[in-house]
Length: 221
Image (cartoon, rainbow, N blue to C red):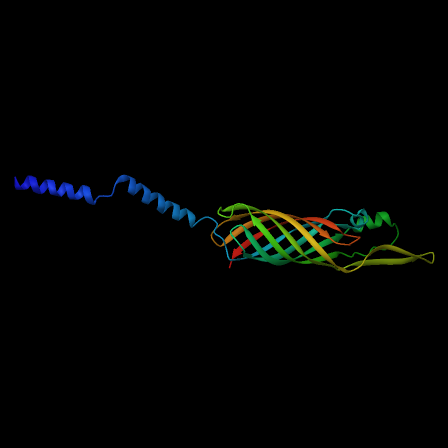
């Protein structure tokens, strides 16, 4: 009789202290969710981006006659304004390569002077991320700043007449760019990034519009 009572009490204690299956399943799900959250994108306070890319003149046939697309490189830093918005600043340099072959075609017999053009853009940036809690997040942005064009000039005399072959004065112009891109985080601190932009230079008669592409890495600071 005593053994029966003790056995019954032991079984009752096990039933009472053992967690229900639903509670155990819920705990497991919460642990898995926390583990997943550690892997996805969380709002970063500060990020540094470093990229390389390509710039291509979009209009002005006279400019594209002697200059073609070229490489670009730059960096930017962004700071969290909200879960979806970031503000920042950056700089980018783009090299537009001189087309020596085109110059010879358009000016036969004239000595070629290869003069590449460089633009240096310093800007403020505003971005909106559409999926800020995902490892992969597309974004759209606006950049406003100033662009410095190094300039290039080639003038000569033909039969005592002054001839201008090209004349792109060095200048500083107000610049606005629209950007679209995507981030993909490889870890909590490193992401790869791809971006395209359309840049407008205000009141620049030679290079008022050009397009570009960027690809690089983003680091959480």
